[in-house]
Each structure stands twice: as C-alpha cells, then as structure tokens.
Image (cartoon, rainbow, N blue to C red; front, side):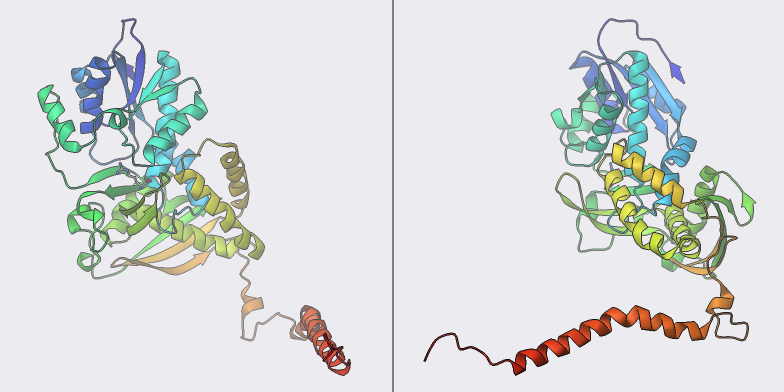
Length: 422
Ligand code: ARG
C-alpha cells in the first residue's frame, strides 16, 4: 500500500490526503513552510469518483515523499457502520453520522502510518470551525499519544479563494473552480453537504446539492419493495440475495436513492458551539436503520426496547463528539452487541417518492404471538386472569386514593387552632 521512499533526515508529517484543494495545498505548505517530509495517507471509504491512483500521483507531483492508499471500505462497514446499525445511530434524531463515523477510521490509519514511518506529526485539511478537526485529533491522540498535529487550515489558510490563489501560484493542479458552491464530505454511509446556498436556513436546499437521490417528485411513479435479511443485527441479504455489508449498502444507496429516500435537512449543534444548517443524503443508512429498528421491535423485550435508546443516544453523541476510541464507547459496544443476539429475521419495506413504509417483518425469534394477540377464534389468552392482574396492578392507586380521602376527612373534623389570638 505504500510507495515512494523518503530518504532525508527531516521530520515527518502524515497528512490525511483527499486529493482536493485544501490538502493538495497543504502538501506544499508543510514541505516548504514547515520544513517537513510529507507522507500522505488516502482512504477509500466508498466516496464517489475517487481515482486513487491519480490521487497518489498528484501527491507525489506536489512533493510527498511517500504515499499510502488504503481501501478501508470493508473495515468501515464491519468495525464502524455495524455498530451504528446496532445503535440505530442518529445524531439529533436525523443524521446517520456518515462523516462522524469515517473520521476515527481515518485517524486510525494516520496513527498506523505514523508508527510505521516514525513520524512526529499528523496533519489534516479540516477547518477550525468544524467537528472533524476534533474527531481526527482526539482519535489520533487516543491511539498514539506522542503525535502532534499541524492544521494548516487553522494556522494559515482561511478562505477557499486564498487556497486557490496559493495553488495557482505554486503550480498545484486544482480541478475545482473558484467559488464552488458546497463543501462535501462523502463515504458509503452518506454525503454531507455544507456551505454556500445551504447556509440560508430559511430556504429549501437547491436541487443541485443532491447527487445520490432523486427529488421525490421525479422518483418513479410505482413503489418498489425491498426485503432485507438481518443476522444478529447485521444486514446480510437484499431481496433474497446474500451479500456482504459493503455491497448491500452500495446497492441500497442506488435503489433507495432512485426513490428519493434519505434526504435530510437539519439544524445541527456542532461540538464547537456553532449551530449550523446541514444537508445530507444517506439512502442506504436511512432504510437500514429504519428496517433494523423495526426488526428489534419484534424480537427485543419491552424493557430492553425502553432502555436501549439511552445507550443509542450516548453512542451517537460520543461518535459525533469524536470520542470513538474511548473507554465508555468500548463498553457501549459490548452492550449493543449483546442486544443483537436475536435480531435475526426479515423486513420488507416499500419505497415510494421519498417515503418508506413497512410492509412486513418476520423472525424465528419473534415475540409477537398471534394466538395471544388475536381477537379471533384461535385466542389462547386467559381472559379470567386479567381480573386478578388488574386488582394487583391497581392496588397501589386504590390505597393512595383511600389515604387521601381519609386524610381530608380527618382534617375537616379536627378543630383548627387559631394562630393568633384575636
Ligand atoms: N456536520 C457533519 C458532521 O459534523 C458533516 C461534516 C461534513 N464535513 C465537511 N467537510 N463537509 O459530522
């Protein structure tokens, strides 16, 4: 996965490199201004249209002494998204946390490369206003406490136009035009769209913000049914075809995206104290989380279902706030995994013009017992037992009521001693 060899004695920095404007500029800046040998680290997390070979070549051309390119898609699915599914994880009740889940994995790879290359620094292209800087730095620190960070976007470059000007001056190839409308972060769990016209929270996001989802009004006029099979909380088959999680997510992004499912428009509380307007498209995540929770309602006990959201909420919060590699998260993961022992079964959903509707669920561990629930003839419920149950269930309330009535009566019959003499 590595190529190129830095043979100098200068100190090394491992840069999280996307191939985009900010990090391309950063290679040159770290090399010339900070006098460091730059090692780039690029991850494939399933973002659209990344030519990893070209990205690597570009890094070299700008001056990286070594480049690492990691296909981390399966690892992302198995060690990050899997837990997010088990946790039905949504931040602010809406956002499936695509970006937030990707950052700790990027940090993990940065730390690994730093160990291997004996580097003192890591670097990234995040700005000083967002959550991503926190996630990457807190996570690299949690895995390799000796690392220091250099964040060019905090230290030097503040606007996109400045970065473009610097790139043009230094002969850095920049495919993006000045004033590009949005800031995008993408991986297979979703697309995060920020900035530009989206900053106006009073209006709908412009249609060109969306690339993975049809507008509901342009979606097919006929609904499509999808069937997802789960084993221990993990989706394992789509429409009867077994596939690994990665392939299932990619396929479902297409199918649900076509039906306009998975658009999210959110006012979000960033960790750094800013309220921001964020737009996402996460077709597969939206469908999988909905289906997964639906199956859980069938197989988990009432008290587990009532308690689990506390853990889910904490999971989403820790993920969002950059605390993926924390002791509390490790404990939550164990709890979540244990809850999934019986989350095996099938969920059928209908996708139609931006909506999804449950069309059936089944499980070998189903707690739904038709003979107990039915009002029909095959009823097995003991109706006479209800009488005794109600007597005991309602007993404390009867005692409460009686004590109140008696107490009031006693007070009324007791002569009141005047407080002051007239
Ligand atoms: N607000 C989201 C989060 O904090 C998305 C961030 C997207 N990052 C970006 N560079 N566009 O997880």
